[in-house]
Image (cartoon, rainbow, N blue to C red; front, side, top):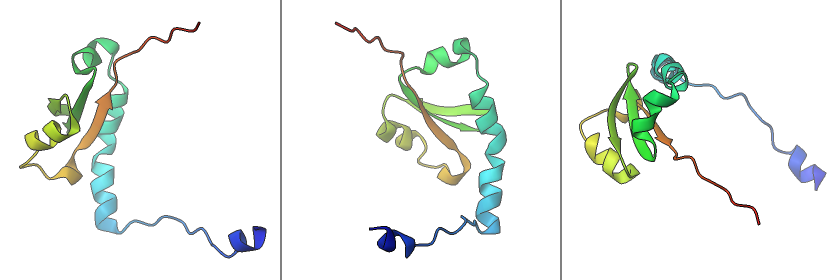
Length: 92
């Protein structure tokens, strides 16, 4: 088994420069999303959201509905995320 695994080489992931620029443009928006307070997130609990330029540009209850809202938006320019509702676990 170990001989079969050793045949495969892991190569570093290298992005073409144009794709790297697209990803890096979203870095600030991702940092902004991660820093939102619970009060700012509360309206979006249980929702799919799309964010760009440190703003939520669309939200919907389902991923399909979100895509409908984003029909005229280049999806490479947005971050799509789902804010889950907190749940309760009952142990018996």
